[in-house]
Amino acid sequence: MDRPDVDHLDQRLNSIDLGALGDADLSTWVSYSGVGGGQEIFLNWRGCRADNSVDDHYGLATVIRLDPQGRGEVTIVNDRVAALRGGQVFYSFWLTDERGNPVGEESDRRFFFVDRPADGLWTLPVAHLQDAHDCSINANSTNGVVVLATAPYAAMAQGDKVYLRWEPWYFESMQGEVIEQVVEVEERHRGRPLQWSLDMANVSLYSFAFLDYRIEFADGSSSRSPVQRFDIVWLDPTPPLLEAPRIPGLVGSTLDPDDDAYRDGLWLEVEPYPELELGDSLVLYAVGRDVTLRSLRADPSSLDSKRMAFHLEREWLQSDDNRGAQVAFSYEFSRQGTQRRSQVLELTLQRKLHLPLPVILDAAQEQGDDSHQGVVHPRNLKGGAQVSIPQDAELGDGELPAPQVLLHWEGHGSTGAVILPRPTAGDTRLFKVRREHMAANLGRQLEVYYTVTRSGEQPRTSEKFELRIADFDTSSYPSIQVRGTADRKLSLGKVPQAGASCSVVAWTFMAEGQLLGIEVEGVSKPGPVVRHTLRAPTAVTGDEYYAGRFEATLPKSFLDSLKIDTYFRLTASASFDNGETWRDFPAPDIQLID
Image: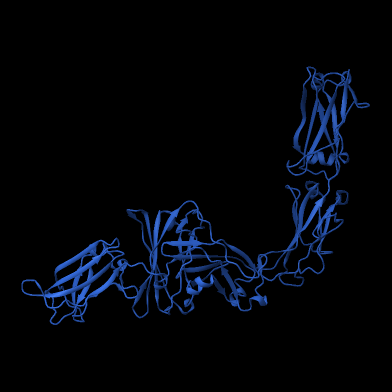
């Protein structure tokens, strides 16, 4: 007699699919001469569990009904089948006599596995989840939408329906609301991964979820992917990310879509990762104005050569959607129970322009400087700085709409940095940086460069000039003056009760908002040094700026506390960069006499 048939048997794996069986009993089918409903047969079910323990069942069973092919249905209870997960079965039967004893010859035996783990290439790839890593997704790391992908399949055809299933769980014993989405395959989908999305609210509420998909082919047959579990966490998973994909020969962060090097499209190579196995599914995410997906599957050549690469067509590079866009490339590999994602390679897809160094008037090179470095003395900046863009720089003159050209004076503090638009009259390549942007950069280095931004594209940055602005020496700043002082001596008896008037005159590059403080220190009658603040560090006001002079009072009570015939010192200090650095003006030592 023929061996019995079994439902839910994956012919590729010769294995019962418990996921497809679900909670139902397993239907098996027997064929013999004269088979009919209500008849009894003697089953011979010899099971071996995954741990090699025995799980046998033999005895009488009733034929429930006949199917259109004339086979009799005999069921095996679900618990018995599920107990053999990862194991195997030999299954046969005998006919029986009137007393229920087996008679005649045993049928041929059917051998099969139960939920056999599949070698990678013998199953559909698992579904991909872009922001996950190590089968975990950080609920804090997404922007409200989670991107998912399913790889293309060899039989992909118009009219197929692909169902994606997200089964979330609050905890092990409490399931959340299952979400199922469907895509009907169109001609444009063939050979390309399908993109899906989930609202973050359907992720962040839960502690873990199962993700899988099934394909219903246009002819009525179907396939199902393995199930992937993702833990939902609130911190980034600890394993390091894989290396970002790389583009052979590319230097820098700009790629010219019209470069002949990419006339056959763009190849992004992937560094082989330690976990690489046959059948791994890899998906490339190219995230720009839109999300573009590409996929590949590891085969024996991937393992032997240790080389894998994704391809993007030149039409994609040169499309209006991508030309001028900034694109982040990353990839993810998955198989059941394992998943990793890579770091990101960020590129701007636009033609490089010739944007040489800006030229700064009076900047000179010192010994050891490279061509992009130089120094300028502040005496040459009293009227501000002049920066020009070379005539051979490609600024898009004559283009409509006109590109935006900006000069970046990347100095220090709130007053030391400025971005200037291109002049509209006169020499449109000459930028004048006003004198109020000089002081905060005295004695420091800054970068000077320009950017060109065409309509719908990312800014292109010129070469950067490293400019050092020398500082004045201390003697170039004004010293504080004390009324009544003669020959650097001050008579205590001649100081008014209101105190001695002090003044500081304006200094080069003085501007509103700069900070000025004044302090005095001297030797007290008991001996220790004492200090007093005449002016706490305070911003220069508009009135002070236009007056060009600062007034303060040195209290007579402080002078009374000092030892006669000793020296006290008045110090004025100014900051041009919001208090980050300070300059002490010349500080006179004045002798206090009777």
